[in-house]
Image 1 (cartoon, rainbow, N blue to C red):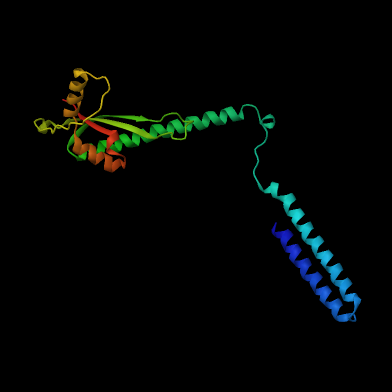
Image 2: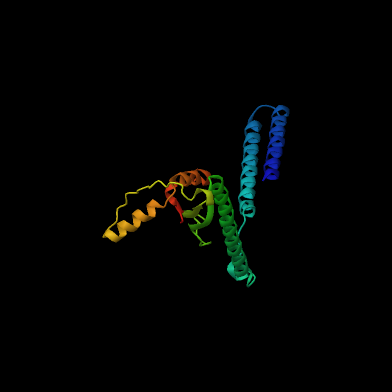
Length: 202
């Protein structure tokens, strides 16, 4: 593209120079009109040729996928398989890293880490692959702090068609939660506190 434009500018300069030289050398009269006409036609032809060359070369600058019939058999399937496998390994590493981070924060807060469970998008083909939906962390009090008081956190939930048994189970679950640790983990993981639940085991 740059070469075509460079040639166009160079040729235009030469044509304008020749036109000016001829107008200076020839006597005034009808020759000047013919010289301008011929020079104008040459300039128009040069510009049209340059743009035609540019338009012909444009498709060559873009990447195009070969048609499916020309693809080597088995390469696409293998590539897709390797891509999915690498995304699954990345997800496993992500879970391990989150577990280690949560373990460190739990122990720094004075609790003993038991287990962390993650609910996330594990379909490698989806756009939101790896998105964290919920984190459930189980902790125990340290041996010297078994008598540590637990603050009950009651969360008002709207349950459709739930009876007394569902309400009782919800209150038992909320009574075992550790809200201060949930806040610490939410800040550390930079996620909404609503997706993190920390449960104290007896």
